[in-house]
Image (tube, rainbow, N blue to C red):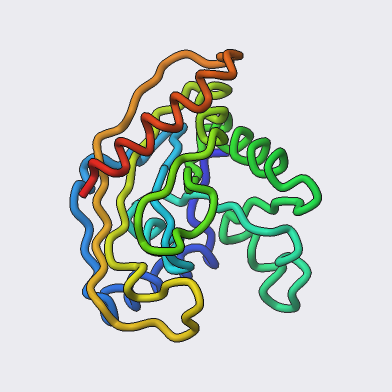
Length: 204
């Protein structure tokens, strides 16, 4: 599922990048570490609704995002989401749906953005990683690119509707290579997730 940028994706990408640079003095460091071709898992910290587009525009390739399946039912926006590489997640079995969708993309030579913490940080600090991303690594053997987003919590934390225009930086760390696939050891999932989160923390 190696993806080209559709017209809608390119439009969203261009607008997001322009707004990020205009309102948040957006800058990226470590861009040379991004894997721009082939299977890849992008792992980032999560503090704000701004994080997905901020990470997305740090990549020259089209990447995939997880989102609630119910969003596809929204008039006008819903039909566009698949063109933006949104992977619909069924809320009735969200964890399984998200993992299967991500694994499918990576096995198809695509790139998917995963937030190891699972949900937005309530205080801007890094939270413990959940085991899900470790399972994706175990099933695909794909390299993981750790990404640290700084400033998005100050810009749009939980409970705030209108963003503050503060500087935001995205730091891309060196890829974490695990090698192999179909690792069935349950302990591997959490250990891999913790190792990835350590790499995210070090990317600053």
